[in-house]
Length: 277
Image (tube, rainbow, N blue to C red):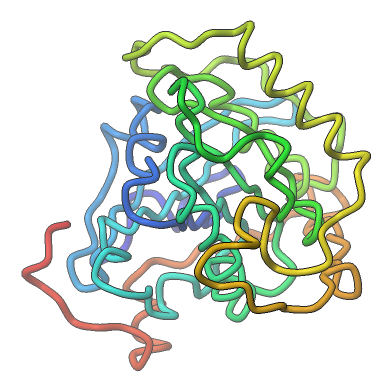
């Protein structure tokens, strides 16, 4: 079953895959965008919800088809069919749960194994919670892999637009692209201490000037259950190239429905018609 308007839209559209441990807030984050929540479609055979999120830029309207796992990651890893034809991605972890950050390298590895050279944003969610376990200065994975990192709070709408704006700029190859309208978002459910968050952002900026750890473990994990060294990531930095150097005007849209992906790659999917998240 094709998603509505996916084959006929007259503006650029992109498949955005969102990954991360269960409970990190991926679904909550996507559902803040009210239009996307209203128009979402469930793909029962794959077991995902696809949310079309529209944004209006100085270069015109764009749409992200956000693929949400519907909780599949809680039952094991995701199949390749979830990633196939992904054009950009968000990896999310919970700043109040250390293990979710420790698992970020695994999600990144699985993502890059299927989707080569796509723009990726790392997001630390739930920064509205005061007793965070992953301090801003301890977040270094994005520096090792040359990713963009944002601290967000899905429930307070803090920094909601930033990941999408970064991805839009990378996909268009235009660093000056900007949003001209604010999307309709659900009202904030929790307040956020902007002064405290400004301090976290300052710590993050200060940490950027410090040397990187020479292994896959961050400072607070070095003495925990898995001290195995992974080697320096400095040797493996990726430099992203614009997906569409000519901007949105030169994009040849090749949107593809979930059903078409399954037909071309049937072995990558598990048939789960009774799965509802």
